[in-house]
Length: 467
Ligand code: FAD
Ligand code: MLT
Ligand code: ZN
Image 1: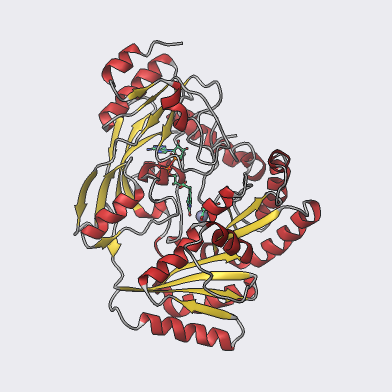
Image 2: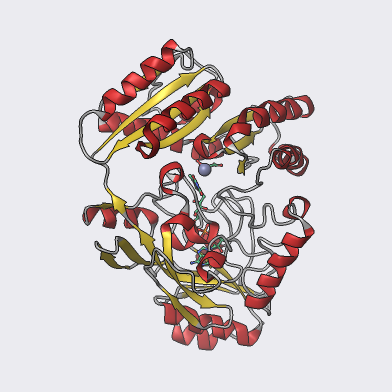
């Protein structure tokens, strides 16, 4: 065991080694993975990060970067028995600058997503990345997982929002790639390599993110639809007419709605008659505060006449819109409360969603008739959280033991439809072995060569992402 004394001297008060101090960093929020580490170090600056990485590289100690620890794939949890330190970015939480003409915000990687949204708003702009964990997740974690969320349909995922990046390499060198360019064809895009690399290539310490104008108004509706086919017909019609004014098209099943309502007595059912599926549709208007609600109402009236929808509740107030969103964004937490969860984060081409769902529902229902389906997600992106909970009162461990065969049934269908086994959560240690089944040997080999080139010692977040 290497001595941590010299590190402790430099990081006095910012190096945790006591078991009780380290405990929250050694497991994920779902308590699915547990690992061990020599210490947790909490740098204040990119230079601090570089010195920690050099210290580790010289001693062959692995590094697990951790942001808000809200990840879904176990990427931020070290392996059991690891000779590793956890590098927490939590103290690196400065907004560095906001520039109106360049329309960017430059932030430390440890900034909480909500803080970035707030800073943009205070400057009269809009930072559109949005997800249920935004009060705790960090920009560094968002970039490292190429996070998506509910604004992707209009604004893209973390990758699309990032213009530049500052990274500490696996050798402990600081690369200043904080560019603000809309155009750059000067060679390999290293920024794009680090996005979605889940801490396996280097440590993101800062980023330049794009800003957008704040919408003057939003109109939000919870819509009951008879089928996914009808939902997609509505999606096609609305997008074709409104294009970028359509800013969200999410879906959830009746199971999801009742799950959230059971756990959130403060929320009420927006549509009384239960329906198999609901949509959360949001329109935004950049120019004027009026009008957008009328547009939504008339679209929904037409859809009703065409039997595409059976009922709809349009939010009358900002608070009501917030409640609709709370239902959608409360699913992950509500599901966590009824037991362990088997999650999927799949995406297929939007047109294939109905076929995927009917095939997967039939295949799972036939082999595991008792599991509870918790199906929801970002329908406009073709990204479905095809999740399962144990049967009421069912044995948690017996349920979790089915995870691998269930994953395989689902993912085989996904890939047959031209999809991916992770749209926005990353592979981490949840899907890193499985990915070998679904990517070609050439693609896996190219990924390995990238890893070998950037992290030849294999010290950056070992056991994650790659098979
Ligand atoms: P962590 O969990 O700390 O880390 C995630 C991965 O990134 C790990 O591999 C870690 O090693 C690496 N990492 C972290 N910081 C850095 C860094 N600075 N440099 C290099 N590597 C780093 N995700 C979505 O995409 N869409 C959603 O809609 C969504 N909804 C969610 C809802 C809830 C209620 C919760 C709890 C989570 C949700 N997530 C969602 C998952 C999660 O919030 C995202 O994956 C988020 O981007 C992770 O950020 P984090 O800071 O918590 O990262
Ligand atoms: C969400 O979109 O709410 C999360 O990404 C999903 C999940 O809990 O699987
Ligand atoms: Zn999601």
